[in-house]
Image 1 (tube, rainbow, N blue to C red):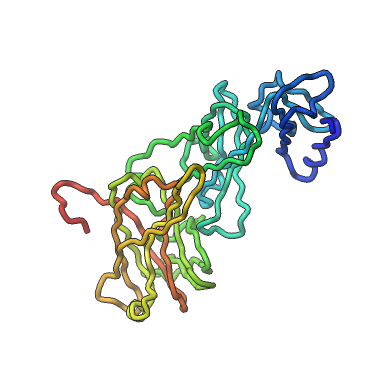
Image 2: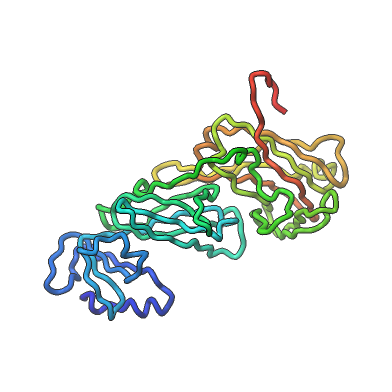
Length: 343
């Protein structure tokens, strides 16, 4: 097989824009060329050719690809919060100042805790900087970023440390309120849901918007990813909200809503583990058969502060009837030496 026999134009017509093939021993090199080690056949697209030394490459325009000697490309994926990030692009810049903007992809039907919007770049070995930017070019942080690498047969290739992600500085009071759209008054909703049917209803405590929840299967929950920049160790946050359900009945059956922080942590190399940390919370007395106020406090510990991602979740257990949730918030607690008891 020689490179001339490949047809990347057909791949492009089928919707595959960025395709690459590793020629591990450079056995498919074009005539009159010499190469040692790995070479790569890539689609003739800006996203694949921008960071490759053009002196190493030969164009095959009729077939729609480029053959690049002594080059090994590897895919790297950046997974982020799926909600509120559809307008973002990931800008990757190399040491020479060349850059490519990568769009995000969301291949899921609905936003749940394990759904992700991801950005994929295929890069040759080198050092890069990555920044998430919005439609106006402003630098933003999509609550968290989980980085993973594609398999490669090459030794001389990128690692997770090859791309340094820029975290924009935190603005004043940006971490004072961690929940977005806790009153369910705006679009997009920004709440993840799992095993539930959710609708925005005007049946809130003051005839305002609230989230109506109907169970679909076991382990139903709603949640929201938290900004990892705000999860500094020893910081304390207070959780509050209202829920419309018969708490007397659910306490008797031990099926009342539970609060938790769902984290993803790195355990070894690129291996990760998901963990649920239950929060200490309670319903404020006296209990009612309609609206009840819940409250809790948590301190950011080492597990949460070092996690790749952290999501606040309200778990509904054995939910048989519909429930309405309103006015959910997570606010920072001011801690001084005069405050010996919090909450």
